[in-house]
Image 1 (cartoon, helix red, strand yellow):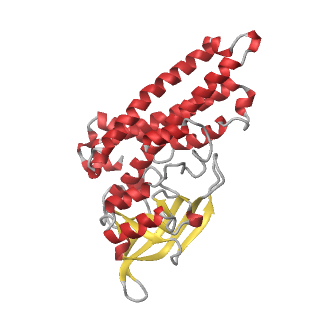
Image 2 (cartoon, helix red, strand yellow; image 1 turned 60 degrees about the vertical axis):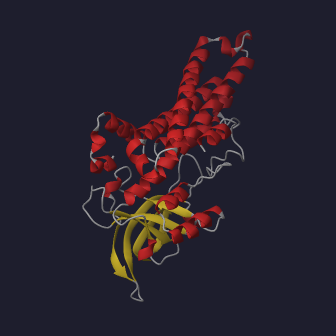
Image 3 (cartoon, one colour; image 1 turned 90 degrees about the horizontal axis):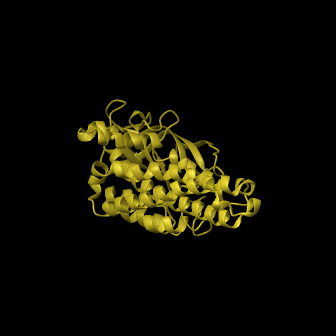
Length: 338
């Protein structure tokens, strides 16, 4: 996935690399990985194959209006409760923000506190909630720097789900969430690497053919040196991403968040920042036409700039790396709070 993502992103924009849907030729299906690891056999049959054939579209409901990176403080809660027919289950109350694709979703993965105190990593559970359930309401959509909005703020008022709507184990929902973000972090890193490569390649071609004052722009060290730095970082980053993805393939899924989270975070924060720097440099080298929408650099910048926030901000990624360096993660409870 990482190799193909990078390859397609390095070719620029098009149906093979559609930044609006993030699909490309390689599907964007981190939720399938969640169900593969944590779903029951019934859930796997319904939701993995349902997503692959397009019958099921799911949102990911962790972030709230008052809580983003501090997931252990979410205010959405679920308590045991029966349906109108006395069927046992859970009642969910709360609000979620940045529910991408909520307008056409069939189901929502909603993380809610089921026990414990705010700040505790234990006591949060993942629920599979049908989007048309009574009590589910889209309150608003958030416009963004990058794209037409499909990011909803959604409320859940006395939403009932049966007991078999739990994904994974009760009170261990953050483990499920980590699976989602780890898959997305390595995917984003590979895409940002490819996009950075594209920006540098296009800048070199332009600088070789553009001849202000009668000589190629590329002859100027003021143009060369920034591209040299970017090209060097790209080469180093590619090796890190490939090595990390290779190790993820060979690590037991349940252990990835404990033994590889720092390497995944390194790939993610470095790649996303590098891509933004490469797009900015491409705009500068191309001059006015680079700033315009006749070139793809502003689009690449807008899209990949959000990766420095989503799936954990770059500060959160660096905190994870710092925690591992400082050996704070020996205590699992403290680790999951990061």
